[in-house]
Length: 116
Image 1 (cartoon, rainbow, N blue to C red):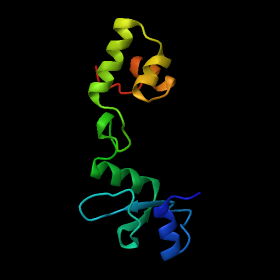
Image 2: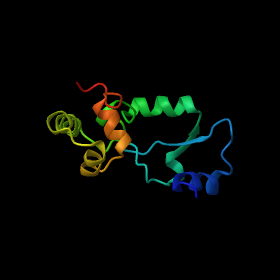
Image 3: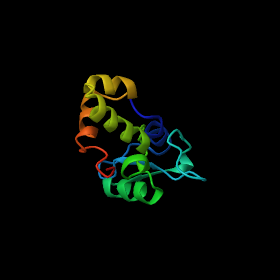
Image 4: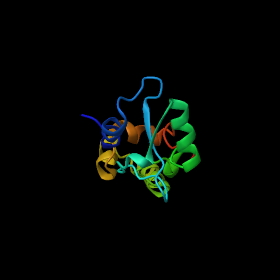
């Protein structure tokens, strides 16, 4: 199993070198994770990946993170439910479509610690 953009790179340019293991996007109009256009792809180091994500605002706390599925409002609700009702993490997790461990970490302010 391989991500489509990585497969596109390999098809068009050959193997991904070990010293630059990331295939990154530079799509017009902003990143498009589903893009496989070889003209929009480039390879980079882990540091390149972090810099690129930071510059594009896809790496950051909470909703700024490109993979975030929860909102600040959701975090406040999760913590309020736990405080007000004492609901079990398993119940909270089911309600918000997250894992029990993630619900626990949110309530303990390990995850989303920037939200008070």
